Image 1 (cartoon, rainbow, N blue to C red):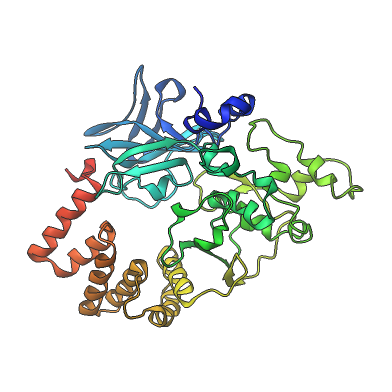
Image 2 (image 1 turned 90 degrees about the horizontal axis):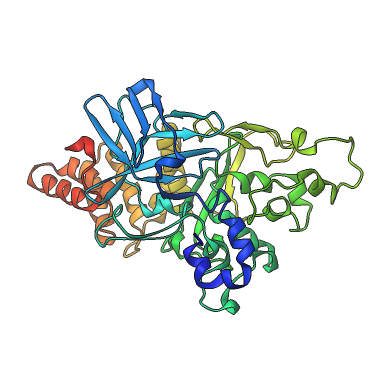
Length: 425
């Protein structure tokens, strides 16, 4: 079946390209689970069993079961799954790893002591795996529309006329690279710039207008969504004058592998030895943030393992606000109080009277609460919610602080926003 976006605009003139693209991992990066395309398996740690039946894929454990209805990931490397509860989507604590052909816990669940069914699948979760989503008003994980997979519009725009569409190859290098970076650039920390949202980005714009990406710190090796910053570290990219980009080696419209060595020899006409350039200069490695997945190292011959200064991927001065938020995220993720200490003066400098920035105020509230200043933390949580009332995480923090009837009221609001996962019933 031809894609929604392609059927409307592209297929009349590009039928062959559209049909080839339909078979690529990008095109199949999310969708409705079909039992015929899945396999059965078990995860011993939590006595979880996945069964591909005739018309459904079910996850069972001692005392319960749920149907897996939605997937994220093409299954070439890995795939995560979701279930529906009262019309709300939640991630299930199981994943399939295509390179090992086994079921196991998905990334982020490795430290759990029991199966966690409470994580909502939001539009942000789907941003790199679906072309478009639309949530029900007042919710974050109940959708009126999910356009599955990465379709034509994600790279070429969704204009109704051919003149309004984008050919990434014909764009200036910064705008061209932004098309790929919207999903393949993570950095040490990636966050929305103040007053901007990632979903506002459209092909033909500079991604740096919408997000800040902080790189640096200790080298981490291969990361799932770190291809762009890894390539930027290579001398090949730096000396290419903007000519080297993802499309040099990858044809996004085809599943077939390209001749990567030929791409190398387009510049290196006399290689230092015959054979497989990529095997030596771009070795595969286990992703540090991807569970049991293995990816190609795009740094091309590697890079220094020495810690680098924290900096903007886009080459600009990092604002106190963005650097402070980056330190908060790193401090929480790595459980490093030194990062939190660095964050505090930066966030305090960034805060301003009348400024709309709910993420900033949530972070300040969190630092104040961790320092025992509960009353001040409460004030910042309230300010954050006043500016954006659809933040279940902030509501939970405030509910824990205030307790009593107001705390219970806040918890009910959280239930209305994200629904009730099966292990909360």
